[in-house]
Length: 110
Image (tube, rainbow, N blue to C red; front, side):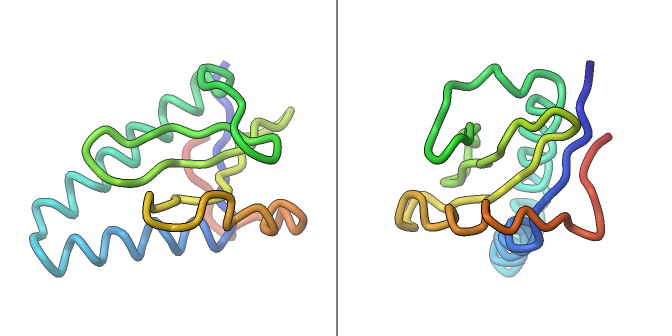
């Protein structure tokens, strides 16, 4: 069963910031980044427990070509993306976001 994927607003902002950074350098690379993010979201929606436990009750998918990981929490009715964490950021910087659990006005896949 494919789960609905939703983003915390801060996680969605990180995806958009990453795409913008790549777009400034090369629009083709930005499109490839977006495609890889979509790929990771699709995998998580189909099988959220496929990846081992990570920090603070989350899981993560490492992007193959970009220095980012998609950090998410598997919940009964959805997958909640907590962060699109760049490898240079301090691990777990996003853990305070788990307390709010606010849903983004736009969801990912369903």
